[in-house]
Length: 331
Image (tube, rainbow, N blue to C red; front, side):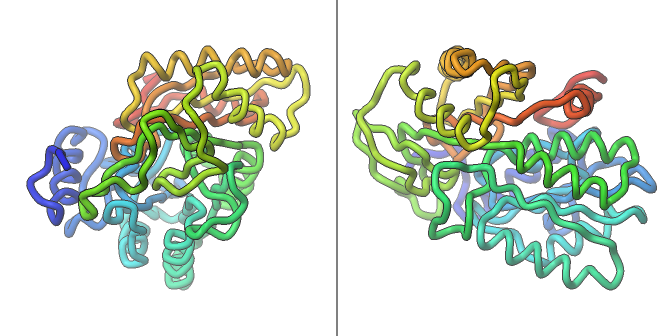
């Protein structure tokens, strides 16, 4: 294992300290490193809190700031944060309008965020949006139902934009649920990743193989197949997404082509071109495209494709100003 770390035990804390130092104009790191929050809070605005295991950066800490999250709770690598972290974050960022938790559908995250919401119920108004956009498998050893993956970015962005406008907790919960229902993702992995504490690849895959439908922790997908050209991969991934969303000809969509941490940007744009061919064949048009490594899996090579149906209201929210470590426009 070759990694730019000092020790397995210190990698998360040192990464958080470095992140907070690099983006001190946007975020501040809580005492005890329990969570990261926006440096400047807006009184009367619903607070958006997310989090999960580390190793997927810039998710979620990179999405803290104007137009997105108010706080994020990082767990150890691929391990859920604890309810205490979520409660501490809520105590600092709730300015009176309540807290909306945005949670990826993984068993540990679901259990701990649910416990935190229960314990906060006496002092804070809370609601939860569960993101479950992965169409590859219905159930896994990590989840009941579909996994929450890169579609989380779209939910956090669109709901975050609405929160900046002062929308209520109930309205933001409804919007988050609607965006989740309109979003589908599927991924392909070319290599495994190495969790520092394990020191070896999460799974073995041949030099001439790829895993179709892999999860963001390296969970198995639909099947293991021989490597194929870039134009052949979206035929299965985007095809499954189009069928899941039942998109009609003429539909406009958001498109996210997301790298897993070990894929060059040049290759991600090759995939954008390939996905657009599949969408065009179905009469679907990507009117907003985001490309880059935003929901990663350490150094895994591969990518995910996410499609979300777009209407005028969602496009307006997407285009409003945003200022985070990972996403910035309009400011």
